[in-house]
Length: 226
Image (cartoon, rainbow, N blue to C red; front, side, top):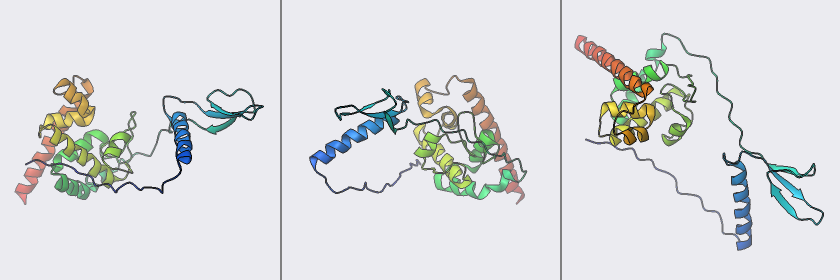
């Protein structure tokens, strides 16, 4: 049985029609602002009015009369938060793990294994690559998985499990490829036709599988005792 994730979006809001002149003006302004804020430009935009009253925009101010009208995007400050090292953290999120596992048909023990390796059950963890939260979602993946706050444990677990489901669908349920893609991205796994030759990814797959098998064995033993 295969599973897929579908997202429902609201239809776009349409504004009342304007005149052609108004539309051209707004298009020019939008283009200027987009250029000013694009990561490639990395420059402020200045407005200058010459002696004939001609207005011009430039990224290089001519003199002190130039006025800044748009600032380029500045790098966001790195998030730092106190670590959670409490013993209770390893079981605190079990209800969310069970709910996400049932919704996306991913084994609970696999989710736990990924969380263990990614953050050691610390919802405040931030990696040098800006991956955040329990399942270490980078901002781009968080947006893809509809996670607005990666530090929210429930959102993070549901988003990370949703991503595991997407990867499992993509790689026909192959566990090793799914785990590898969670670490290196699906593009790298597709490009190399298997686990990428990255030491980090290869070690990651081994570690996640080891924890997965240990959690699964513990779950089986616990069920037998009951």
